[in-house]
Image (cartoon, rainbow, N blue to C red):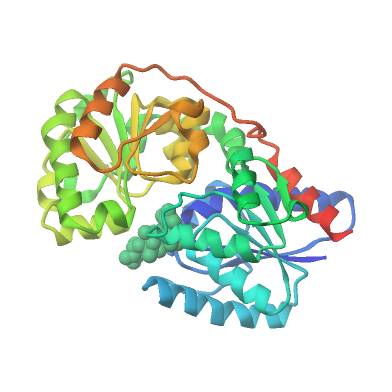
Length: 386
Ligand code: UD1
């Protein structure tokens, strides 16, 4: 059997790592799966891509399509054209796509048009917000996939409501938690001061960061990159004001900055101000273990990332989700998780920030988020093939 797995952007890398390990263990003991890893090249900076391959011991991609940046149509179009050539050459039995990035959409469409089976890992998540590019990617990919592997039971319900037959759906759990579980120990050995020293943004060199002389200093951890939060100054600037004028007076904030966000802050003339605030510790995009360590130790997380909401749930980090909706409702406090939706309305963020600062860690483990999802993924594919 020949499988092509596709990755394109940062959140894909932690999801493919455990699957590749399971395939290679299977190959050690039984018949051979010919596995080809394709990287579309959507994320190309070392800090957004290569560092994850190294840290998570993912073998180099067999094929890199070198797509890079561009509008959505450019990224998807270029990926389809390049991936179609790979499919015609390699003729795989399966294409495996992950999550909801542009590579997921582009490669599932290209494969289906050549009558190649598609398996979607992380199927069935829905934000019901079609203004989110990721929601379009999820809807199209799930509609086309032959095998839909869901991370939770709410996702199964979403798929059934859309008319997807039961025979295509398999509940396997959350593959990203496999990666979290196998890297917890390594992450916990890291030292926060060293993470800061190794990753701080050069422009902040004048800062001393002596607030972290003590290893027990509480801190807030922040990430933000969604177009809905960073692409308009009317939305981004009030959030920055809130961080500078209010949060930084209560607690230091560690903020690894996504390239999109850095570009926007520079474009709106906010960058020069934020790099001068010594309670706002801006870092370059972090490696997997570094981010996990900070998440394990943070007093509170502020984020618009999907994956971090899930990791906060398992680690118990009290989390404010800077979005009005989530495709991952299982991560919400009202459903047993660690996060609460606050959108980008400052009075709502302020109120929940105060409440959340009082909370202690309460780890939760949704069903089948047990570290063994990758094995169930491979079993589902093998079963389907029989
Ligand atoms: C993409 C995903 C999003 C995911 C996020 C995680 C889609 C539709 N979006 O959004 O779901 O949460 O990745 O990071 O696929 N850039 C760099 N270096 C890089 C990569 C990007 O500088 O290695 C710059 C690009 O030039 C671009 C910006 O960052 O200006 C955004 O990159 P893009 O890949 O378009 O989307 P993301 O916002 O990263």
